[in-house]
Image (tube, rainbow, N blue to C red; front, side):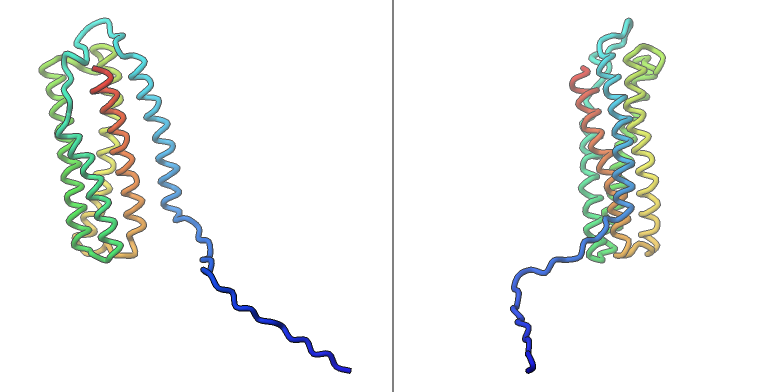
Length: 203
């Protein structure tokens, strides 16, 4: 006697699960860097807040600081253009990527120029140096730390812009450009905190 077994095949409808993919290691590395840098900035911000109003001599923040509105607008706007650069590269729009990178670099340079102009005014006209009082020490330390990060970001963005102008940046490099854009977004976000602490609350 022979037994015949038939397997029933029931069609399963529904979305097919996509295989899980490891995150891009560049993104993970940049996330770790941002976390570490955030800890450093928190220390400097807390120190600045702690020493507000404790200077034994002038000048004070209210006497010499002015709101850097123009520079702030330029820096925060640059985040929009670096995002557009990444989006353009994902669509293989190399010309759009190059243009938006150039605008990002230009806006970053304008921000640095406004910071340099402010420092020149504070040092030569107001006599505020890093050794003048506690305000001068904490101000130049915090704002200078941020400016240093802006310079590093601009160097990297300028290098990418150079590669883009020579046709060496292609669609497959979009993930790498996105990693760099994360650093630039971080620099902009930190400036929002610095602006509020130094130029709004500190005055």
